[in-house]
Image 1 (tube, rainbow over the protein chains, first blue to last red):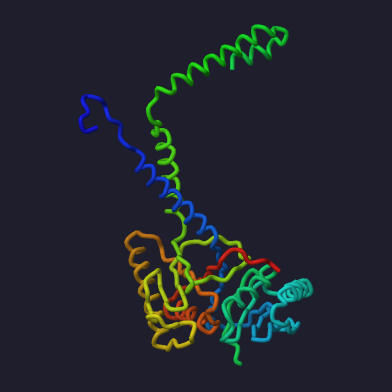
Image 2: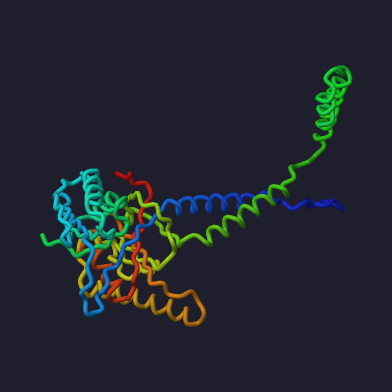
Amino acid sequence: MAGGGGGTEELNLVPYLDIMINLIMFMVTITAFLAYLKEAPIIAPTLASGGAGGGEQKPFLSLAIVQAGVNILGGGGSGGKQFFEKGDYAGITARLHQLKLEIPELSETLVVSADGRITYTEVVKVLDASRADFPQVTLGAVVPQ
Amino acid sequence: MTPSVAHSADPHEGAPSQESDDEIMLRRRKHAHLGSAIEGLNLTAMMDIMTIILVFLIKQFESAPQNISLSSDLMLPSSSASAEMVPAVSLILSKKMVMVDSNPVLDAEGNVLVLSGQMTPAQWAQVGAALTLRREFIQAVAARGGAPFDGVVMVVADEETQYEHLTKALYQAGREAKFTSFRLILKSGGTPP
């Protein structure tokens, strides 16, 4: 090359190709990772406007997560209080489904509250257990110990 | 292709078809002999393919939600939730740090801050102030023709975050910073009951 005469030298594309392959592998990895993340919407509690009131509220259920397990509490006169030991997520799902069938006018919004020391993982597991029948969830206040 | 077409068109003409196959073999050998004279591989076509793939991936990455880097301080709980992540303002609660849109608000400097429950009301107020600043910035951009403020905040919390801290963070986002919609960001892979 140094003493080359009039011969045409081609551009060495190999380093450029290496960079391209690395970039592509990085992009593919990042894209695959982002598809790995999902989201669960939470309905924010809203303040009442302070109007005349008098509207009829639909019965709703609330779940209280404590260290020992989960309490299903009937709100708005829906009844159905029951306690499930920690880890019995299938039982929670079955009971919520049963309540949904028994009380057709039940609100689709579930109120979930927990003991302040309950971990986020535990809350998410309970949300997963209830998602089939109650896709809308609002997080309530901390349950007093 | 031509010999095979001729072969299928007239199966009784076995000899001419055999000759055609011989010709093909001869041509291949001739090409193989000539190929030895080629110096180096022509990478131009491969470069074209690589460039197209790269441009496609960059465009896809551009439209994807913002990057959230997980670490030992920020492990998301697994969930069976199926909704795809939509980009929004992020509130990150890791074991050591609270961040709003990747900007640190509170840094424990090595100590476990959020997990230990040592967050004071003044520190939570700092989180609220950072979210308020972010909301005001988005609204200012929207006033100049940018995307409108949709009031959505993504809560990215470590799996060991206590419920008390989660609700305090949501309180700051909703009550103080006037965000109206919350989304919990979770790791795909939880088994539905």
